[in-house]
Amino acid sequence: MGVLSRIATSDGHGENCSYFDGWKAYDNDPYNPVDNPDGVIQMGLAENQLCHELMEEWVKKNPTASICTEEGASKFKDVAIFQDYHGLPAFTKAVAQFMEKVRGGRVKVNPDRIVMSGGATGAQELMAFCLADPGEAFLIPTPFYPGFARDFCWRTGVKLLPVECKSWNNYKVTRAALEAEYEKAEKANIKVKGLLITNPSNPLGTMMDRETLRELLVWINEKKIHLVCDEIFAGTVFSGEEFISVAEVFQEDPQSYDENLVHVVCSLSKDLGMPGFRVGIVYSYNDAVVRCGRRMSSFGLVSTQTQHLLAAMLSDDEFMSKLMVENAKRLSERHEKFTSGLAGVGIRCLESNAGLFCWMDLRRMLKEATVEEENKLWRVIIAEVKLNVSPGSSFHCSEPGWFRVCFANMDDETMQEALGRIRAFVSRVNEVEKKKKKKRWEKGLRLSMPKRFEEMSSMTPRGIMSPHSPLVQAT
Ligand SMILES: Cc1ncc(COP(=O)(O)O)c(C=O)c1O
Image 1 (cartoon, helix red, strand yellow):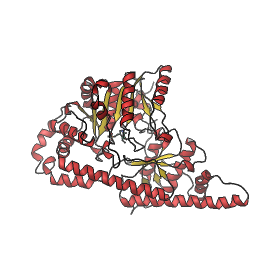
Image 2 (spheres, rainbow, N blue to C red):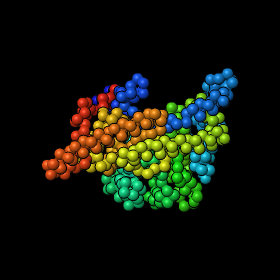
Image 3 (cartoon, rainbow, N blue to C red):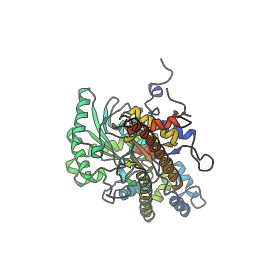
Image 4 (cartoon, protein in one colour):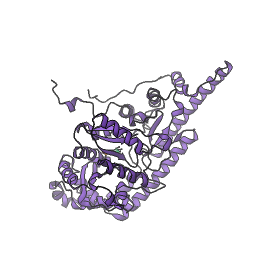
């Protein structure tokens, strides 16, 4: 018998996957323009660092919002002793206001339905605990955020069953694919309790349209299962169509759907670049879920100090409106610069208008369309190009050759450095290709393009190396 529990000794945390391995490679050798210019650039972290100075300015101009200033310290005791799991009324009201703003003012958000949690991470676990028992499952369209294995499944024992979506139709989730996976689960005696979607998508940066959301609502109602919609990237939409929340589609026609089945998860981690504040929200139309979720939220409350500061910031309507406009503008500019830089060397990304990343298509660089080949290429990118990007397989993408590349967690200079490295890599690949082509031409053979990166890496002095993890691995 083990000394520790099954949960403690399982690797359900999901840390042993390439998504997190890439982070370890970065931690081992982090890029710094002065101290470590040849280090690994972190492009595996979906963090929004483009507007922090505006929030910093606001904090300076509003010293009463903080208890750590002369002007605000008189609130110290009130903040220090408050621990009600309903949250500060001013906070839940301000969060509701923010959620409405991000949803274009077309959704009514009731502060009394807001349940706090430690980031969307805690919110997802809270959802799983409220909606399913161990062994029961949620369907989830691919590709999806690797952290869900930890957030939704690890401690709850709930399963996620991937529903394959493909690039040919921009990864649109279809009724046929849902039905097929649902039936498969039934045959395997697995009870499907719901569908978990992420809109806008991580890793794709695309949004679901109104019709798709309507179809999903209809489908989950037919099946009498839950719909959990992770809208953590709702405030990162930077161009094109407006974001449509599942709450908007539900509220347009509430009689047509069972309100007890609809739940939204969001947080301030991506929209405002505040993952450190650990503000996560469950917004459910189901009264029992709100009640139970609130009790459970005792395990992951947002600190009252954070609530106090954010209540003031989020309710400053003028500031928030300007911030959101500026946020979208900066994200759009960064996305444009980065994707056109990639296009300049012939690398295409899936068209997107949200998120903090793009979905880069390197399929043509694979010798074969296999996960092994994708991993080989990924290791070259980490070890040789020194960029931590995340391979599609870590997002359960069924087509090898796609990579998620984050672009909003760095300054302009670092992004240019990353583009420079990609440019150099591609031209080295092309050079090798040209030489090989010539040789083979002379031999009367045709060179197949995908061999390139392998040949190239064997020519470089370092060769392919596995990123070494500085972290203690769970056994
Ligand atoms: C889709 C999705 N859900 C949840 C999370 C967790 O976010 P938080 O930092 O708020 O816990 C992330 C973080 O990347 C995410 O991408």
